[in-house]
Image (cartoon, rainbow, N blue to C red; front, side, top):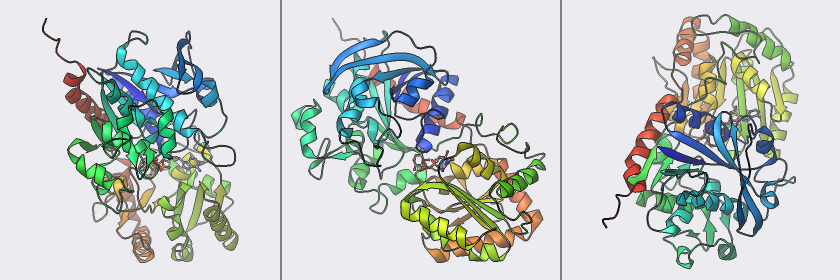
Length: 481
Ligand code: ADP
Ligand code: GLC
């Protein structure tokens, strides 16, 4: 089974969110189960710098307004990879989607159309004599890959399109369609058109042979107006082709027994090291060390999605119980400033670090007693799984992958609330404090959380089964003479 895995980010070289973690974890898990999965990524400077064993450039010529496009075969994280060498589009430092001022690059339509168009070039088998059975694209950046494949007609690889976050869609003005090189009739409701513009997410949802998203609950949610971000109609119409497959996490990167970032190792069977991690975290965060209450950690992008404005308004009872809050995050300037103000108002008990810091993130999961993910929506969410593995009990909203990974109640692994409203979060936090007051109960929950199996093998089996269903289409029977 040959699979071309098409995306934009890859942990640890280039990461803006959980997509990078998924791209680093899933392909090796699929390869371990026998699939010949190879990556196709833009040659952003950080990815190019991380490329191992580079081989000779394959010239593709001019494409989509870029004069000299090529492919750089290499390995990234032990997975065979082609980086798309298109300096005019990709040789830009920093965030792959935004310029230094935080605005979308004005030529993003062409930059990411090129990703889809190059993916479709693999269909004829001319690249390294390797023809994929399946082209598997991720999020809007790869949304045009299924469209370019469909435009070829005839025998072609099957396409799978995975939605990691429906709220980022790649929506562009109608005029950009003229530059994409797609058949004119694709600019239609039954195509890439959406509210008069070109929408890459819609293209993926419409043209892919199968759509997946990163949790079963999110797969159901996005067919409703509350969560569909305007795509609920398309998704509902394609419900028969839509499947939710829960993400895994990379237990090579996330393992408290051998995590170099931690003050002390620990395991479910020997959890004592977590005490040292907790003390080290409070010290590193500049907080008073003798906390009798729970240490609540947050590692997150600070956007409306994550619901951290609700948490800000709910922490008083935690602090009154001699708890601590340690937050690491970046994003909306207003949310950053509000958290910083909260820390100033509570010196010694609330610590806020604005920025991105992978090592500190590991230390928070290891040192925290609980981790909050009160998201308004959450396609999957990885941090609640990292938290559980590191013995920090998750406090989450019942939505998307949070609903599919955290259980509440007598045999629970965390604290789950329903409404995205302050009273619901306050009630869950009150239950957390009650459980904290009963150490035996807390430790039993901790042991259950740490015992969960979130490795990638299960998800890889599901994706592989999906690819196998599609394979007959990718391998058409020979036409009779
Ligand atoms: P999303 O992709 O929506 O941001 P996920 O939970 O899927 O949410 O993934 C977030 C990833 O980014 C996790 O690996 C998390 O640890 C990491 N992360 C988020 N914010 C920060 C930060 N400020 N510093 C370090 N890592 C962060
Ligand atoms: C997106 C989602 C997040 C998910 C991640 C990886 O960034 O916001 O919930 O875990 O993709 O699939």
